[in-house]
Length: 402
Image 1: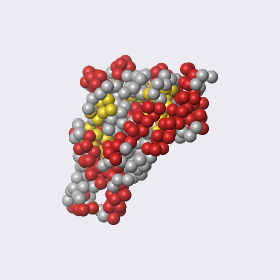
Image 2: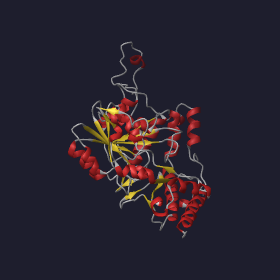
Image 3: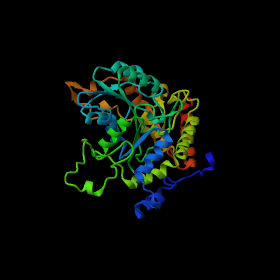
Image 4: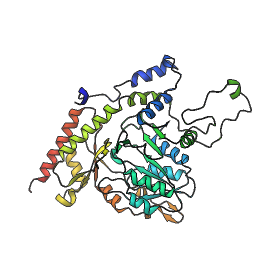
């Protein structure tokens, strides 16, 4: 195993228990004046090489904070990919803005810069890019479009922690990046959590204030600053200068998150090892095409994703393949989420007399029906090997002449 790590490792096998115990037993362990959220933020921004990091209680909250920081409001348009979960569109709608969907690349599954440019109008305020399944978006042309049209780029990196694009971590390339620490993501701060990062102090202040109920004394790198007790007890003391929401991460969650982040490299390595097992299993199978990783990219493998073309090539449907894999001892795999504008919550929604479901992103719609997402978050690599072997046996059986 990599770095002599054991074949089986618990999900919370670092300092998570130690830190949560310290939090419960001591207000300031070792007289550290920093809160747990401050410690996590400092650790995160130092590792990722960004100037500002702001904890939040979920990736979805982080998207809402990022859009607010970008100044997105009623009537604005925000372009986002058609192949992603619906939360990006939710956050846009909660700002009173209009989600505009761009199609994706057939091989990487990520947003297509050419289609982004086709969708830009005078109302476009921002672009949300999603690095899907652990693979970075092609960021250089996106940033050129942002400069050309004076747009803010928000990176949704919920699935791509520690993924790289030509040496840079996803989430650190656009104007503002958002990470998710939900339970199934690369790391977790309990069951939910997230982080917003940026190198722009103005965006950091806006994001922190919006997610921190609008306290006026919040700064780019801290919550409410220390004031004399006599000041805050004064009946004339004014607390809020921004309309915001309470998206703050709890101290308990931050303590767990810090313990997780301290060993994030090990966690990512294990996902990459699992992905390699599945890649080896499908090697040579022309109708299982894995997500393409261009040169200069590092995939952190939220899942190992393939474009399944078995129905056209061997007459076996996606659901039939799934059933056979489970029957032979596999533990299933995920489909891609339904295209946002086709989800029940959005498909009948009209904006300015036009239904969101009138959007047409044909590549995304086709891929969504074919993608298979195999787990990579195995904590026991022996189990991962067995599941990959099941897949290999199934492919061999289906490739045999009838």
